[in-house]
Length: 168
Image (cartoon, rainbow, N blue to C red):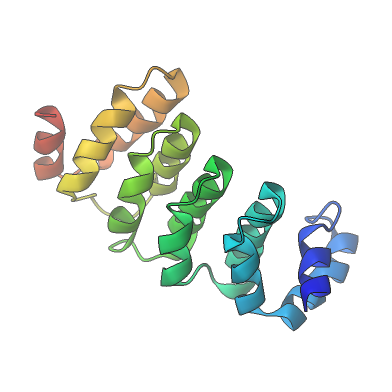
């Protein structure tokens, strides 16, 4: 199984049809559990771990709750950012604010920006007081792209969450 997982994660040009024909059957044979172990294995190369998250989203419907809990606290910012991306694409609209708030508040500007982008386009208003505090951090960031990502979320906030943001 380990060989199949590594072959999946190291597949060249993974979005091309010829590469997919190779790595997709390998991912199915390896299974979700093996790919989640790869995603959370800090001994693996960061690029492999990011790719494992991508495969889990595309082929297995996303990350399990335990993987989300582990990966949102991961040491590698690239892994945390891809986890935010995964949450935004696979979780229900009512779960997303709670799961992604720690990533919106992340100290790494890239992670915070990707987390904000994962929230964009979610149906309905975002109603979350903890998210307001996290978003205030993004809006005060020294990084321009970070501030823009945060500002793009403001129109999606409920009136109550916007009030909380205003007092931050």
